[in-house]
Image (cartoon, rainbow, N blue to C red; front, side, top):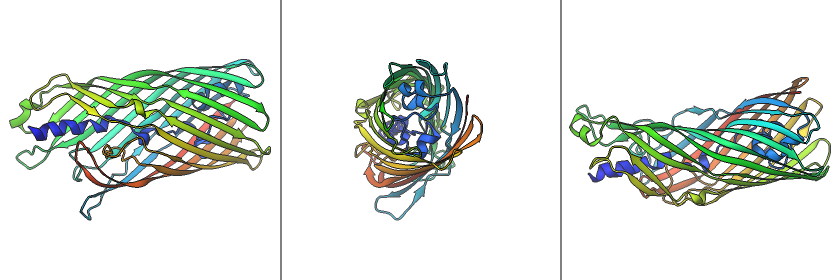
Length: 407
C-alpha cells in the first residue's frame, strides 16, 4: 500500500512548471538579441513583448515563426557511475502575430498566438527514474487580442486579454510487474484552459533611448476530466479503476519586465531587459481523481517555489539596407528550491547565448533566423517525494526561423 501511495505522489511533479518550461521563444529578432524586446519597437512580436509599443510600428504586420527545441539532459545516480540520457525529441514552440491600424494613427489592433510554456522530455522505459517519469509532452498556447494607444509623442500604452489552451500527456512506470516481468504503466493526459492579461507601457523621451515596462498576469490553467489510464496486472486492477479521470490546476506565473533600448548610431541598437517571474504563488498542488480506492488517493503536495529573475542583453547591427546581424545572452535563476527538482525539467540556474540574422527578401518581406544555446548548471539533488537522488546535467539547443510580411 505504501509503495502505491508513493507512486501517486510521484505523479505530481510532472504536472508542474518551472523556469525550464518558460520557453521565451516569442520572436526571432528578439531571440537573436538575447530575448530582449520590452524596450524596443521591432515587429509584430511587440504584441507579446510590449503591447504599448505596437502602435508605434510604422506598418501593418503578418508574421509567423517556429523554434524547434532539443532538450538534452544526463542523469548520474548518486553513488554510481551509471549515466542515463534523455532521448532526442524535438519540441516545436511557435508564434504568430498580426498587427493592423491606419498609418500614423493613435491606435492599432494586434493578435498574438504563441507558446510561452511547454516541454517535451522522454527518458525511455529503462532508466533509474522510470517510476518518477518516462515521458512528458506539455503545451500552453496563448491567444492574445491586443489594443495599443498612443497617448502623446513620448508615451504609449497597450494591453491584451489572454486565453490559454493547455495540454499534458505523460507516462510513468508502476512497480507492479506482470507475469512477463514487465512494469505497469500510468498515463495522464488532458486539456485545460485559463485566462489572463498582458499590459505594457512604452516611453521614448529621445531618439537615443526608449524604455518599456510590462506585466503579464498569472494564468491559472485548470485541467478537468483528464484521462487517468493505468495498465497493471489483473490481480490489482481493482485498485486502479477504469475509466478514471483527474482534475488539477496549474498556476502559470505572472512576469514583470523592464526593458531599455539604446541607439548610439543609425546602425546599432543595444537592449537590456530584466524579468521577475512570480513563482512564489506556487506553494501547493491539489490533485484529484474522480474515483478513489485504498490504493489511489487524492494528494495535496507542497511545492514551495520561489521567484526567479532573468537578466538579458543583446545588440543589433545593420550591415546594410537588407541585412541585420544580432547577438546576445543572459542569465536566469531557477524557481525550483532544493528538494523539488524533478526529471521532466531538471531546472537549475542557467546561462545562454544567442545569435541571429535578418534579411529582406523583397519589398515588405523579411526572413529572420536565430540560434540559442542554453547551459544549465550541474545540480545534485535528492527529491523529497520520490527520493530520486543524483546529478542532472542539461543543455538546450534552439534554432529558429520566421517570415514577416508588412505593408
